Image (cartoon, each protein chain N blue to C red):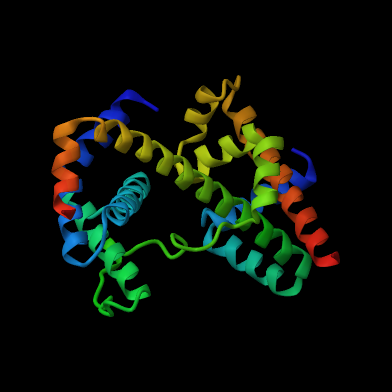
Length: 173
Length: 85
């Protein structure tokens, strides 16, 4: 993990986890739930930061606490304790796919991780971390932007084929 | 670039909303009449969902690592655990 990111995560834990933990406690939750909710909120914050969709003039602590509140209400709603999730602005909403199931079954996931680790890392860098092709060329040691770009498409092809073969095998069986 | 990679690039531009409005309309028309193209788009979208899911998993383990490090510190540990007592 990059040193600066590690430092930032430590700082946000120290400044914001106590606030989130008190909120979760007041809503009837426990420590493990507070930790999970806090982590979800930080992940959502970082994703929005990468995409440049954070609202202006809101501190990370305030934003993370706001997201954590929604995550907590969602968990409580699932357990039938709270029902109010209305009037949440799109700026602070949880991504639609955030609490969805894994996109592929566990055995296939293990296979893909083992067989195509480098490709998955490259695709993750591009689609999740929102790295540019230039950053990918540097990080993955490609000689040119063109090579990095072509490799991205080759990786898409490789993983897409593996997923299609797996979906076909599931249909046949 | 060979044909299949060029097709993958085109689908990628569609999914990332990087096509011009005119090219997008043409692509959407092709989608309507081609089940094979729809299947390719769906599979490629699944790859992006997989990359996103793996990215979140990695971020969560980084956060777990930092949490466990911080919980070794008595003052921090007490400031959190005392809330739930």
